Length: 255
Image 1 (tube, rainbow, N blue to C red):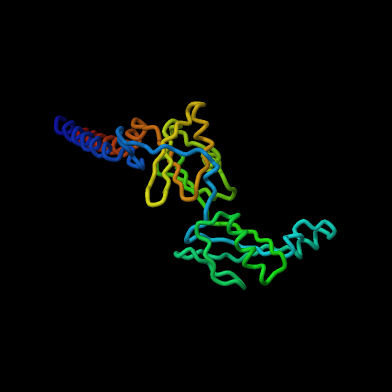
Image 2 (image 1 turned 30 degrees about the vertical axis):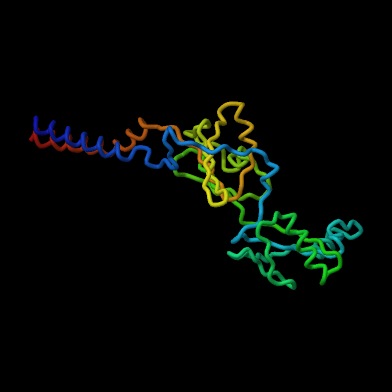
């Protein structure tokens, strides 16, 4: 009997040691208490996206200042036939250049969408009468971790100036364990990686909630530690093993 108890004790101690090494191992982007977070800029006036290398864009060209887009004298069926947006996708290369029909190689790096449209309208003026350009960037996206450890969602930025709170809602909101007072925004600014910490658990945090996100941002909601549940989950196989060993021992000793 003593040997049996000693064996069970060894199994329990080994299990506790094993589970202590696996608890909360799905947490990411940890920072110590002395870590100095960057100050977030929640002013949306300077957040307009600029075309960057490796972007994917669509370019639609309309003549006569795009009057056909607003034409009301034709039927909707005729407009649908005449107004066709492009399905062609063009990639901006690593030098920031993109090859477009008719006008060839153009450098759009650093331009906002409006600036690029105005620039291309001038380039297409040689070939078309009063051209009107519509550009869309189709690869803008962010990653949102909702507070369930390593589980995340990729959110495409279809509209400009999507705020932090809107991005979290598009991702499905906070997870059950998500800590609204500890939200990290990881953003590439030039050659530097900046990390902001937001507190959306209080109404004062709304000024940060309205901060526009930028393509490539990582929004990480820190999970609330759930040590008890994880220990019980990790220990469940051990309890089953102990029960099986105890039953076998009772069967052997009874015989």
